[in-house]
Image (cartoon, rainbow, N blue to C red; front, side):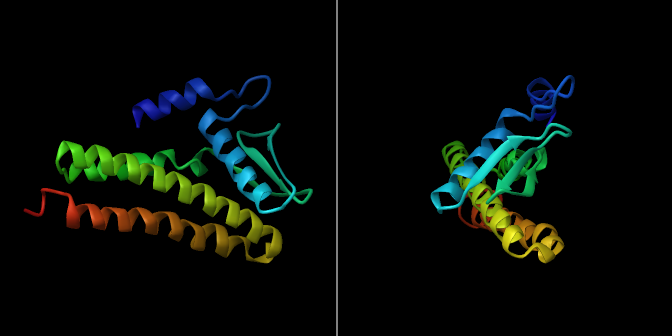
Length: 157
């Protein structure tokens, strides 16, 4: 986490104007691309007044993507677990890479779905953002952990 904190300090800008970290900007742009692919008019714009990227969906400011939305801290959490419950070096590296990629992709897709649902059902903001969508990403990580311990970890042996 120390390296991640240093990365954020080096890649974000708070003076003169705001600029989110490159990974947060990438997640916002990829979320936009998923929604554009689905046929919607979407823009991802650096917020001028805070450290976030605004998502405009069909011309309406629907959501903002902050550092916590980029999945990097969740990937670090995932990797820490599989390292703690070690397996072979080969399995650990391969599962770590594939699991991290899956978490990243699931995260981008969940944000895209969240943006669409927030636009379609704005009254459900709290339920969607605070319950449903964290359950998707944390549920994915939990399932990956179970699979790791069950099939690859030497801890159980």
